[in-house]
Image (cartoon, rainbow, N blue to C red; front, side):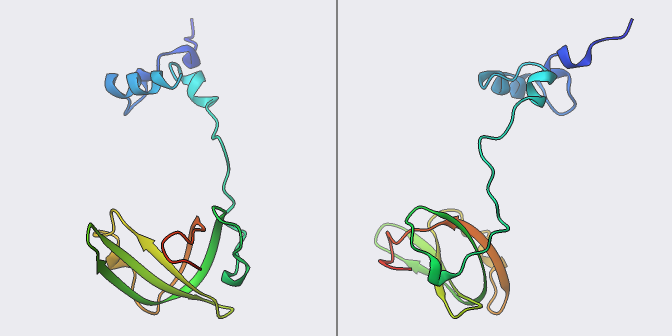
Length: 129
């Protein structure tokens, strides 16, 4: 008689051991069926590209395409930050700021590279965008 695979415990999937199965069980995923019916909470559309000049809503998640014109690490009193200056195709300027985890990623930001990035709009640290 055939087994009903979707009713099997999640720990029987390749790559899911007892520890990961326990972590998944905490969010309600106990069987393969539960995993297939675990849908994302939201969808971010990265294809809708914005212009820097159009950024007005604080906290809005936007995607911008631009060219890197400068990078620098700035030491502050309490911590360091990594800043990337970007110009978009319409003459807008924007500064991307990382406070944590930038040591490994900063080598990918080279002057002249074109990049697409997505993030939340905030004027908290720069006063303006």
